[in-house]
Structure formats: structure tokens, C-alpha cells
Image 1: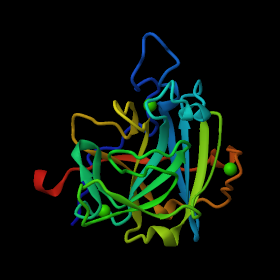
Image 2: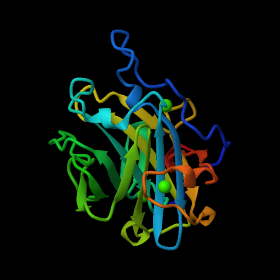
Image 3: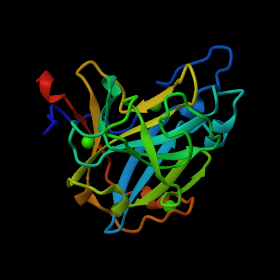
Length: 232
Ligand SMILES: [Ca+2]
Ligand SMILES: [Ca+2]
Ligand SMILES: [Ca+2]
């Protein structure tokens, strides 16, 4: 099932300051404000880069006095560009087959069971409740972060890609109710969107070393409208 309709290409970075604001504590939620998402690949691995608000600090996501149950950074990936496989849930999630829980400093039993510890997860197609991802591996993910930037990689063979492109959703969010945080891409009035990455845009030379200059020339992501087939 083909699910993509390209209506337009839009801004490629996530807005700064679109996260929830706490008037009593202006620094609260700064660390959950996504700013930039980039991807790259070579013949062996997919590489990802997430940058939050430059006033933020990813180390503070573990602070349970700031964030409900702490907060985490997760990447959902549609590995077959097919909305009939993977998790589809409301406006924000359309056919995501795998989950990379890339910064998850405080393992908790998340009542939604969506990647409640660091690791690589695959959607359980027969699961009930419908949002269940099963942990596959904790060692395949290689992640480094410093202040407001994070980079990581996962072997392509883990992803079992079925398409020349992938769709990605990035979430930086509290672990527990009220689950406040930021999504990239955001909800918008035209329907579900996804960040689409063509694997053919690969750039060599990314190293997961906590230094981020290697991301400077990486092509930006296209934000593409995605509309479920039954809603066309
Ligand atoms: Ca943002
Ligand atoms: Ca899918
Ligand atoms: Ca690097």
C-alpha cells in the first residue's frame, strides 16, 4: 500500500519554542524542545542526529523534578513505507515499524509500554494493546550526546529495510502523564506528516564520537504530507 502524497516540501527544522511552556519555571521543557533532525547512511549503518533548543541540556532529561518520570528521546521509523504495517495511532503515528529508544536514562515501566528502556524495538503486529513494541536488542544502538546535541547509529541489517526511503518521527517527551514534550514533525492542519529520508542521499564520514562537525553538510530532511489511503 502506497501512502505518500507529496503536497509540498516545507521547513526542514523543527520550530524552537513550540514545546509546552511552564510560566512558573521557564527552563522547564526547554530540554524537550526539538530543533533539528538529520539522518545519514552508508552501506552498513543508519546515522541520526537530534538537536534540541540550544538552551537545553539532554542530561537534564533524567531529572524527575523537572519531568514526569524523567524524559526520553525516541525515533520511530517506517522501514517499509507502508502504513498497513507498524504502529498507527492517531495523527502522530502512521505505520512505524521500529523504535529506537536512544536516550532513556531512567528505565521505568511505561504504562503505554512504548520502549521503556534504551534499545532497539520492533513493533509487535499482533499485539494488544496496539502500541506494543518488543525489545530486540540493546547493544546495536551506538549513541553519544553532549549538551543539546545527540548522534547515534544503528546497523542497517537490524532495520530490515524494504524501501529506498524511510519515514521518521522523533519524540522528546516525558515518560509519564502528562507526557509533555515535542514531536518532529508536528501535527498540522493538513493531516499526518512525516520526515522522509532517501537512503540514496547517503554521506560518508559520520562518526559517533560526541563531536558534531561531521553533520554540517548532511542533506536536510524533507517534510512530506502523508495521508492515509482511506482518507484520500
Ligand atoms: Ca521544537
Ligand atoms: Ca510500516
Ligand atoms: Ca560525530
